[in-house]
Each structure stands twice: as C-alpha cells, then as structure tokens.
Image (tube, rainbow, N blue to C red; front, side, top):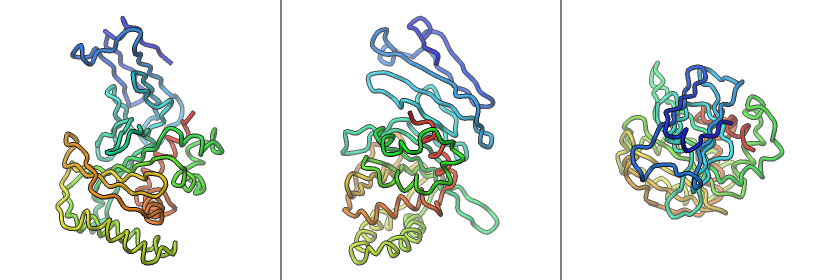
Length: 288
C-alpha cells in the first residue's frame, strides 16, 4: 500500500497494471485540495487474477468520508473514485448516496445488459450493484474464497440479496429506449419469479405500480435509474435524466416479494447480466 504525503500529492502519480492505469494528480483548486493531517489518499495494486482483458484493481481512499475498505473491480478505476464498466465505458461512483437516505453505499461491481436483436447483441444499459459496508458481516462465511468459486455459489447471492442492509441497483442507459419496451423486458423477467414465490394479488399490484413509473415515458441514453432496497421491504425508485441531474424518488413500493424477485433478476441463477454477477463476485472476494 503506497501512502501519499502532502508533498507527494503535489506530484502526478501513475500506477499501471497491464492495460489498466490509475492516476492521481494535483487538484485544480484549493477547494478540492487534499490537506495534510485531515485527509490522505491511499492506493494499492492488487496483483494476480485477471479476468478477460480486465486486470483486478483494489483502490482505497480516505477523506472526511471513508471510501471502501477494499474494493475488487473488473474495470478501470480512475483517480476521481469512479469505475468504468468496460463494455459500455459507463462510469459508476465507488460510493453512492441514494435520494431520501443518509446511508453511504459501497460499489460491489458492474456489468452490461445486452439484448439479442436478430444476429446482433445490443448493449442496452450498464448496471452497478451497491450495498452498505456492513454487508461484509452477512457474507463472512465466504471470506477467503476466490471470485471463480463465488460466482458459482448461488447461496452467496441469495444471502447478499437478503442481507439486512440497504442495497441498490443503479442502471445507466447506453442507448435510447422506449419506456414501455424497457419495462416489458423487466416485467417478463419478474412475472415468473413472483408467480413462483406465491406473491399473488399483492405481488401483481406491486408489479403494476412499478411498471407505471416507466410505461409512458421515453428513456434516453444517459438516464440513471436507481432501485434501492430499503430495509425491510421498501423498493424506492429514483430517476434522473443525466449524470448531472439530481436523482429524485418517483415511487416507493412496499413488497418484499417484488424486491426478492428484482434482485434475483440481476443476481440469481439466470441473471440478465452475467458480467455484473461476475463483477460482484470479484468485489465480494476483496471485501475485508
């Protein structure tokens, strides 16, 4: 672990592993400057595993708000504390605070959602998975296991989904999508899961309320949709038209059955984004 002193912060530092690099440079203004004694920046390179063409990095930073103790990421990590999902080049923050919540969530991993159209696979959106740092306690039984083992362990993902901490799925659109089309694909994945759970009429009502957020709107490239599981059983839906716009809560739905089905869509046996599930396994393997 390399510790940057105040003197070192004034210099440009570049650390690279294979095709991935991390750079930290002097802030442009006093406002953004890192002060001696009040903050320090730490960066570490985790050598070893490689998945596809993405080397695994672990980066930690300490300031007034502590960033992840340790992060395992299947993507490039920038000095501005964001992760780039490699298939879409969409960026995700390492720390996330969702609307109407004071909790800070930690990034676990991100992947791409692709849709087969004729002979082509179209990248529709990237999805990032977040959870409160306390999730590590719920996953302690898997500590020390490799990402390759974790990604095949369905019990791990069930435990992650049911862990009594705040969690979020953040979807960032990579292309323009009609709201009805977006919802149709999600609805198609959710219905059989809700049916299998025996959610009944309450599940149907929750699903209809969920769908009403998206059916009659146009979702354009750059839109950000955050689906937060607020304990014990609230699904909070927030939408922003761009990264720069503020996320606003558009609906809150009480349904644990819907939440369980939603997280199974992304982290279950037949996950709609295998790359996101694999990235989350990487992130969990690096948790302290």
